[in-house]
Image (cartoon, rainbow, N blue to C red; front, side, top):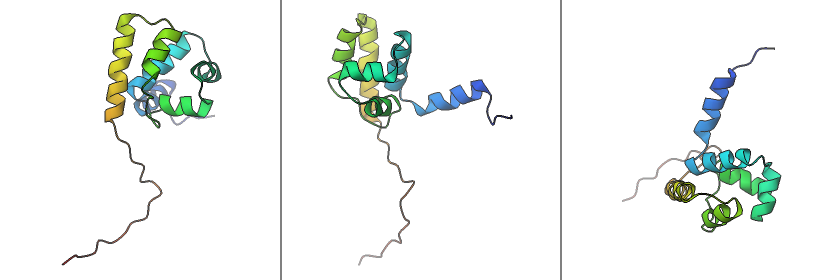
Length: 109
């Protein structure tokens, strides 16, 4: 079987899809040896929602950094880093135009 990407290429391509906050959250989850379901349950959200936040498809809820820092006993430096990443995530606006139709511009007098 031939793969289109090497493992390293796949990881690099996959990581480009994540926001900084998403990368940090996923790293924390993996470091704590948690499945998506485990962390989602602890945060009181669905697996789909947590996954969407990790992948940058949903905004980071305002209360999450504090909640995560308490739940997982993060250091002050980890909290600051996560706060910065959450702020950067809020600045990113993603608009999916994949399924939109082209329309012609009308001339307005």
